[in-house]
Amino acid sequence: MPPRDFGRGPVTSFAMVPRGLVDTSYQYILINTLGEKKNVGLVQLNKPKALNALCTDLILEMDAAIAKFEKDDKIGAIIITGNEKAFAAGADIKEMLNQTYSEVMKGSLFGEWKRISHCSKPVIAAVNGYALGGGCEMAMMCDIIYAGDKARFGQPEIIIGTIPGAGGTQRLTRAVGKSKAMEMCLTGDQVTAKEAERMGLVSKVFPASQLMSEVIKLAEKISSYSPLIVTLCKEAVNTALETTLQDGLQLEKCLAYATFATDDRKEGVTAFVEKRAPNFKNS
Ligand code: CAA
Image 1: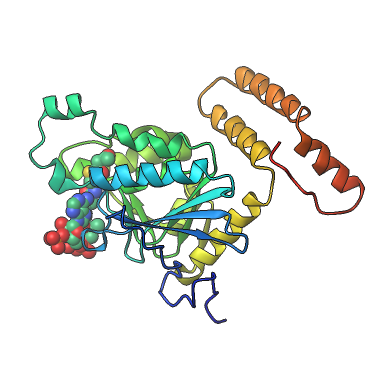
Image 2: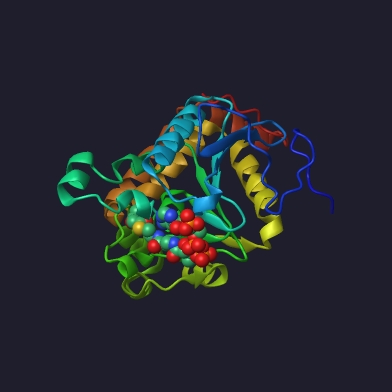
């Protein structure tokens, strides 16, 4: 099958990542809008020589790009990806080399990383190659992880005398359970994409060359639904990780009832009964 054309000329690269828009305000990322309706935002990490090591400036650019897509009513979902060798090989070790305790405390090291997990729109990680340390943590901040078959996940901080600091011990444990998370954090060993899928860290694995087209399909599907209802649904699922079952069920009930106050729920149900496609208005 020939590479898909995403509207900016043929896509030829290995990972089929549509070429990013030239936006000179970014040094370490490329951004683009994808999909037939251009309703999917793409952030591609673009520091390939350092395997997309996550320096502070890269994270700040990522934050700005996510904020931009979040504000854009046309965008229904956001994809974060890297390249064929690395999603990201972790926080920038060279940047951390001479940092002291008081500096990281005062500077709130990794504080800026929270932006992704606070995004109200669905964020999908498309992981080819290494997702290590902060790279694995960044993928776990996303709502769904799809991986290429050569992807590798790990929390190798222990090897360099530190521990995960951007959610690795917490999100990994919630995703895969204590024993596996403990094993990964205490040994620094990597797991393959297939193992990550078996453990529940990754939703689906595809041949590396198909990853991007599959992720775009997923993002387009989510973007075709009511953005308002998608946001409520995301909030409900995320709450499951933060609260007791009873409190979560209570919140879910409130949010489900809240959909009855929206035009889009009326439209969705009416469209079903009238056997036609819904025309959601985000209201
Ligand atoms: N930070 C800074 N630079 C990095 C990096 C990182 N996390 N990972 C790789 N690089 C750089 C290398 O220094 C090298 O640069 P030079 O060519 O200038 O020397 C370049 O990327 C290519 O790397 P390698 O030559 O090491 O490539 P490889 O194919 O032999 O090995 C690898 C690949 C196994 C991923 C190896 O690079 C590696 O182990 N990287 C470090 C992984 C790691 O420890 N990540 C955790 C960081 S700490 C963290 O993330 C804390 C947190 O919780 C947020």
